[in-house]
Amino acid sequence: MNGISKLIERHKQGEQVGITSVCSAHPLVLEAAIKHAKDNGSLLLVEATSNQVDHEGGYTGMTPQDFREYVDNLANNLGLSLDKLILGGDHLGPNRWQHLPAEYAMQQAEAVVMHYVAAGFSKIHLDCSMSCADDPAVLSDDVIAKRAARLAKVCEETRQKHHPEHEIVYIIGTEVPVPGGANESLDELEVTSENAAQKTITAHKDAFAAQDLTPIWPSVVGLVVQPGVEFSHDSVVDYQAEKAISLSKFIENYPNMVFEAHSTDYQPATAYHELVRDHFAILKVGPALTFALREALYALELIEKELVPAEKQSQLRQVLEEQMLAHPENWQRYYHGDTQQQRLARHFSYSDRLRYYWPNQQVQQAVKQLFANLEQVTIPLTLVSQYLPAQYDFARNRAYKTSAHDLAIEHIIDVLRIYNAACQPASL
Image (tube, rainbow, N blue to C red):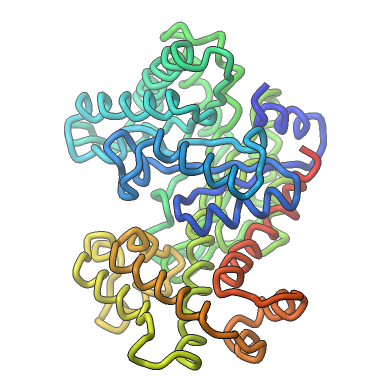
């Protein structure tokens, strides 16, 4: 049985357990997640998103097989057993090709899911909610479901060919805002209604039946809805459990299904406990992890300025700014306002579109230089206290030299600890 299925079985039996879905391809984020899982003896769910990784490489340059091999090697090197690792694909569908006619976009989507399943990914989020070039502005539940079932058929055919002994679990539905955070400031959100959730399930169940996929319907274990959590560039909408009471009770009627909550980044710790209690048992986090990474690296750059001669410094933030200005396609459509407002958003927004620039060669070189410079010196605890105060106790309690790399990893793990405390996956 798939590890996700086992967890959901426990959750449906009344245990308040869940799992964190780490949605990132950044090497330091993945290292932090693997170390955290190893230390806790817990399952690790890592998901690649449809724009990060696909059969053409995505913005990371990695195919699903590349990503699989990379994460497996990293886990092996860090001592995490591969039976504790689950790989998933997020928002798999025509997302990257929605500016093209629907049939072509769906053919590309079929290629995407085929490559994910062939590479051994065992959790697949089928998301065909986006309109393509020759579609109406808003797709009906039936059209979305038919396209999702079309992709599920490809997934099952690929599984039978490459991994017949493995179970795939499927997630259906989509959150209301776009993947990666909303594009505007937010005050509050409307929680998905029971009626809308029911329509999504019914449409998909019927569409699966039309593709002769009724036998695998129990493998549809998650429904993405809007629980009333979201973040934009400059604001976060916190979970209000009282608004989701009826939605929470609704999913209790489905013995194999829980909710998957997207855009849970930046919530207060209490919210994660409430979400898991209310059957949002799969909590996805992405930008908050690269946000923490950026916090750590910018703090380390300030430490570097205190300890390293100016001519040898990495100039990381300056390099990032230069590359974002030279290649504005990943932020320009999203960040508005005057020059100062756009500059602040580029570096400090919750939506963290800066994350798209970490794979840039010049940026990677600057990060490498930053770590190399700080390896040549001893970082005083007083500077850790000044610039990374949350890591001060971690640094002070170590019996050996604390590296810049360790400080960055620990800062990312702090985010994962908050999720883990709510999901309580240590005994999985």
